Amino acid sequence: MRIEQEDNGLKGRFYIKEDDEYPAQMVYLWAGKEKIIIEHTEVDEKYKGQGVGMKLLAELVAWARKEQVKIIPLCPFAKAAMEKRAEEYKDVLYHQGT
Image (tube, rainbow, N blue to C red; front, side, top):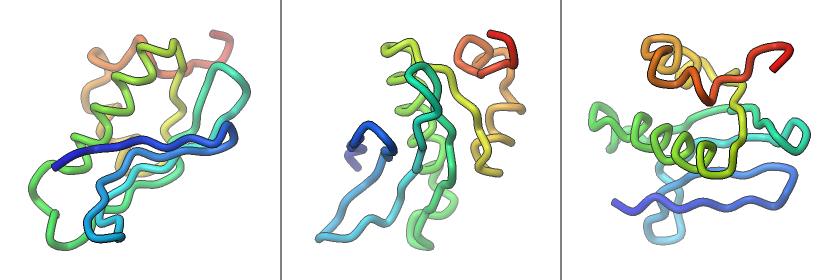
């Protein structure tokens, strides 16, 4: 399973592509130059229960750290995952005034 990224400067996504389909993706929007909003996560039924959503999140977080981008997780999945491991993600989570 290979996770790829695309970004057009306004929005982007981390995704898995198979045969011209995208069975899993985590979509984000840029909110300025230094922060993104995770808008939604989609995982096809055939990948459910395999931790694919967490793998997408891990790739996105690694990229955000490298690019020094803060994350606003509005997607219910990403928000719950990041809150559950708040200590692990505190460096990339956006907080008002930071």
